[in-house]
Amino acid sequence: DTAVSQTPKYLVTQMGNDKSIKCEQNLGHDTMYWYKQDSKKFLKIMFSYNNKELIINETVPNRFSPKSPDKAHLNLHINSLELGDSAVYFCASSQGPSPNEQFFGPGTRLTVL
Amino acid sequence: SQQGEEDPQALSIQEGENATMNCSYKTSINNLQWYRQNSGRGLVHLILIRSNEREKHSGRLRVTLDTSKKSSSLLITASRAADTASYFCATALTGANSKLTFGKGITLSVRP
Image (tube, rainbow over the protein chains, first blue to last red):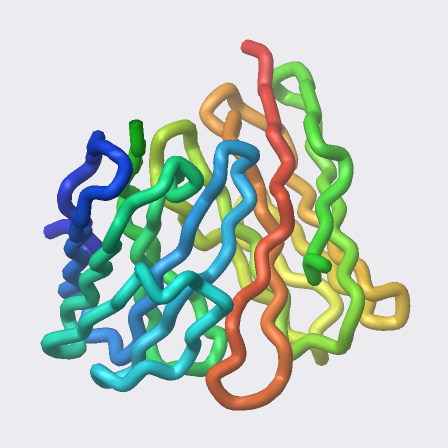
């Protein structure tokens, strides 16, 4: 009965590789987000989708490409991974694009070697 | 720069004491939210206070909002060891598709 789930939980990979993180929510929400949390716990939004449409796209390298096949799923693909991409990535969802309560997934800890 | 900034950065108290955490922000907001993050976990929403509200309660939590000072406080009464976590304030600006901007967080340690 997990509300927002992410896979994988841990991801260790070499520089230059391409990887994907998947996110699914079963709350029936319209809006989903990707956040990046750095080693100092600073949490920054990367992308937001509402009903499969991109509505927020922060200044993120174009090596990061979100994809929303349906409103319950939002995946994040990262090309040519760099050391600085190491962080915890959180998926979240909310009802509607307005800034309501957000429900977060458990996070994916990405380590780039 | 960040919209919300919490104060103090770290707080250590004894079980049973009250914990007060503060958040300041820079521009007008639609609402302000507080979240908790336990170590190695995702964030959990605690409470949302709108710009036209001054105080809200939820169980042992009390949140105040002073829009004239652009600040908010989160009070946890009768703290428990299980309250040990990082606490974040997040501000939402007015307008459609407004994003949440998080502060750096406060690390609260409650000693048994």
